[in-house]
Amino acid sequence: MIAHTNAVVASFESYDQARDALREFQTSDFDMEKLSSVGKEYETEGNVVGYYSWVPGIGQLLVAGPLALWIIGALEEAGMVRGLTSLGAGLYSIGIPKKSVLQYETEVKNGKLLLIAHGTSDDVAWAMDILQQTQAETTTIHTKQAAVSRAS
Image 1 (tube, rainbow, N blue to C red):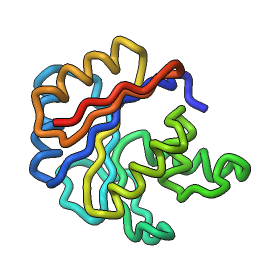
Image 2: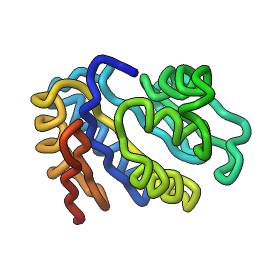
Image 3: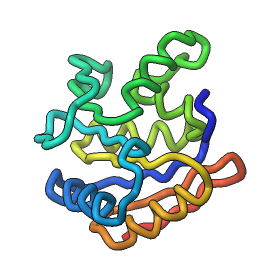
């Protein structure tokens, strides 16, 4: 489990929308090391940290950012992975509830891209403010206490 289990997850219909959101984070001076993206075989201008050739039920994934490490870490803890894909295990390991994990796996399987910002409560609130300026289809904040969702 990482130190901060606060995250905001945004889903995007297209690579262009997700790329524009990443640019919003860059121009806002958000710590880019607190961002991850995941999708099925989409273009990337950044460094892909993980390329998973086959995730049962999802297919090929490209993962950028700390999520790749969370996936690997979660896979090392066999009990945590039960019933989840490697992507799901990585999301679950940072405190995202299983019900939401299943939703995110489905979104990725259906071609959407996820952008995940994590950190302190302030980091996540800032990320949510940035995401409100983007074309995110949905954004959901996950904290230890509750999840707050916004649909565009």
